[in-house]
Image 1 (cartoon, one colour):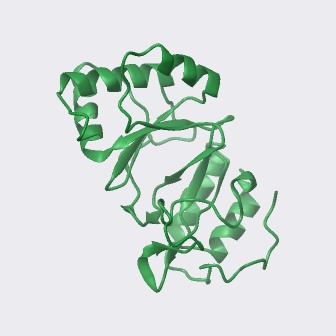
Image 2 (cartoon, one colour; image 1 turned 60 degrees about the horizontal axis):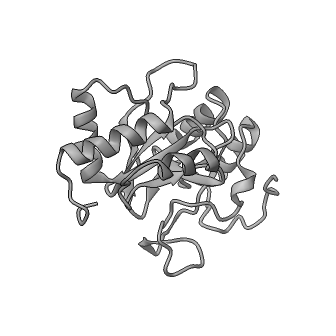
Image 3 (tube, one colour; image 1 turned 90 degrees about the vertical axis):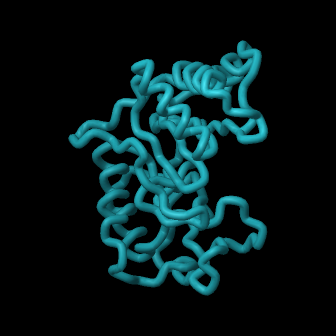
Length: 221
């Protein structure tokens, strides 16, 4: 699915040279790392705390696909350049799953504690994406069946853990969303190859154990 040039160009997509770094980042994700991306809905310029989509109760303001839809995610350099040339402030949205990384996310404070605990025991992590409210640990692609078996085998999994798998999405740096700026808490190592990411089983096991050891309570999660 490809967006037709000129279609709904008025959807918070005025030309600007404000954020050329978004084009560069989107092209790196798409062409160098082969991560399918697409532009998300920008924030409403009249009300920066609100999403630019038609839903006044949007729970992920500025951090989700809308026009085009998620199926339009691509690694095609020409399409990526056209999108961010015309919509330079649009968030960069990763279509998770397939050949692209998936993610496990949790609230920022428990996530910070979990990462500190994982560092102490020498757990190797790949890139970690952070907003002021939630952090997301990138993991290898997994199937819903694989995730279901993993969760079923556990006695306890914090309800605040979210799983961004096949058919899901995640805003990537340097996006600006309603929750604040998206940044790398753990940046990918420089280089041309796609960043290494761990298996979802290893991450979920380690995060749950770390949260248990650090005494993070259920209400805090």
